[in-house]
Length: 37
Image (tube, rainbow, N blue to C red; front, top):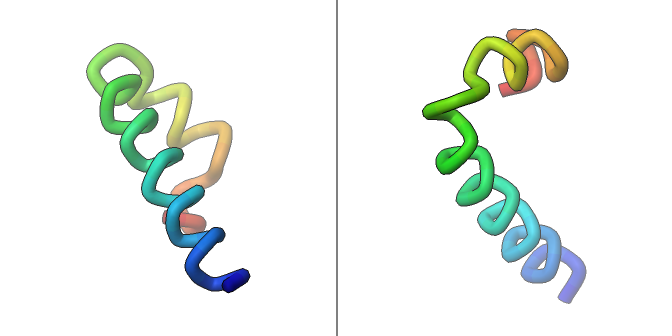
């Protein structure tokens, strides 16, 4: 169950990130660090 829940959460975050990418690519990548993705 935990794996499924985390996967759903990850997919939701990824979807939000894709929307934000158009405006905030540099911010997202500098905040998270290039190695985490």
